[in-house]
Length: 383
Length: 188
Image (cartoon, rainbow over all chains, first blue to last red; front, side):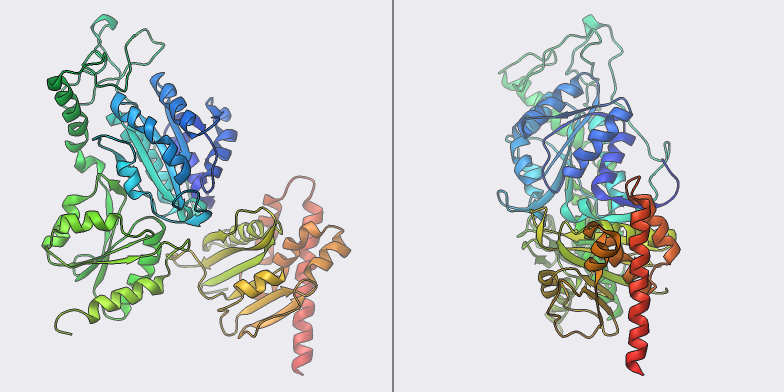
């Protein structure tokens, strides 16, 4: 890869980031605005010894990458809202059977087929709860082309480290935007591989974990034979209905994530120290917020930006600190209030929580956010 | 070419506006600038009104969309009516004289140039109208150097079409020069 800066699209950065991370098996069904990820990988994967499969639909795509991952490959699929809905059942299977995989969802305006080429951020709660049953999930959300590359690499690292599906929650703005970027060279970013068993085949228990709660994972085809199921199972992988074993397994699935929140959760925090109002935004909307906050600062308002890169698990501790310090919070997102619910839950009445919500197929204008910021100041007690 | 340039290229799907935007952005990178390129288009591959936007700046670019164009290009009537609003005072608007009959009132300097006709008659392919337009708007604005836009163009176009594309770009430079001469004559 060149060390010269070049013009790179967000979806291209995702595809190149995946290859950088070692992804060598992609199965998908193209859908706007994620199609370039498939298109680029169809060309690039054969060049690096990987395989690209165009599947008959999104359900099969998700199933195919689960199978691919069980053979030891790093795997991914990419889609948008309508396809993300179809993938949910098998995402749950990957949670239950602990299969590392990455699902890129380049969000477009919904519900249903909505507007294919219009941006939105309406899948935040679907990323969290789209598949049924209690389950932990990791979802990352980039707001620039450079970050699309970096967070794709990170998505694979987290998937491999914790044996979980990781959602890369992009949006049309970031997916289709092109920016001047110098892509990282090999070695610039860490690349994590899954831990394999060191015990003999006879002594291998596929779901037996030590204190970090993530079991070593054997590759199919390397002689370790074991059972994989979406049913609750014991350490051997065979199904069980015993409440004490179910309890043990479901707690472990959560603990393997919850014990490592500090490692998993990242965010960017700008000018929040002296701020009396902090705007919380992610993805494409965060770009409009950056502009609005600069303009608000010029007007003398002390405004900062909190931008989660890890959206799930929710950065509860960091938002809780902002709320406890008495700063006002303003959530800007391209939906009718999804992350807003989490911010309200964490704030728990400790501070004012305002919102700037838009879901009309257009990226929110900086002026719209600036107007909201002014309103919050004008209505403040004492004014 | 100091400062920030907000550029909006519009026309119908299939006229190659996104490609023109990409080449303009790549020319600006060669000039050492920061760039962001975005687009807005409907689900259809042909027809309608679509736009590609480019922001060129020596600074880091936060908001990626054009709010008030410094440079506007309109290659069909529908896109001019839909997207020409908000041009900056002293901005630059270029429309295709053969395809755009009605230009709404604008604070920008408006140039009506035979872009598609030049591509068709002098290159023999309407396909390169986007490249003629790219030549005209870069020469009229000076936001990127002629050398950089030529280099960026030749890096992007398919092998075997370099001569045709270079010719189209130079015809675009020529349209700009003629327009500037007529403007000076008109002022006198």
